[in-house]
Length: 107
Image (tube, helix red, strand yellow):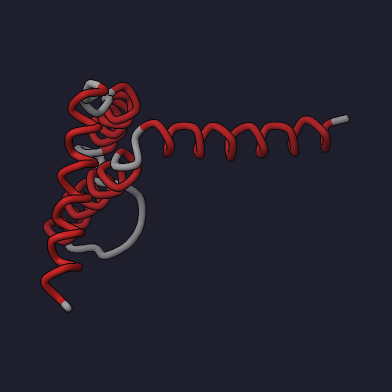
């Protein structure tokens, strides 16, 4: 039974990832950028202490974990602004007109 729960948990995490990706495709990119910035801060702190690898420096450990938790929660909660139906149709017609113009000018 534990294997089934494990597989169910994995499939639910995958499904949740795709749902969040479909709602806001920019969020995973922004989340990864924030993680890379935090890793850079940790690397710089390690270099100041004179070590390359190992655990987080004692001064940064609780602070870095809290910052990462807070930023992840903010990224998930943030949504992209929504356009009205009229604005979407206008943008589609605008791109269609530009495409037709470029198509006619290329011949």
